[in-house]
Amino acid sequence: MSAAGSYTAKFTDGPLEGKTIRTDFASDGEPQARLTVPAGTAGDKTYLYRRSSGIEYAESDRPSAVDYRYVEAVFG
Image (spheres, rainbow, N blue to C red):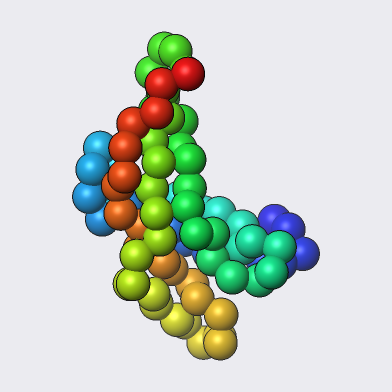
């Protein structure tokens, strides 16, 4: 975990719908604006997700979970 901490990224649609990952806050302390996630298949395919409006807080002033929406599959 980085000095900035981490949060749960929740994928609300697309190929990773319903999945979550733990990811670090950006260097400015905010949730990442976009995430590139390996597809887990052969090749260089990744999925691009962008932060959406859904944010959850749990006993902190920093988000504990942030929603991400699918943008596109990126090939190699």
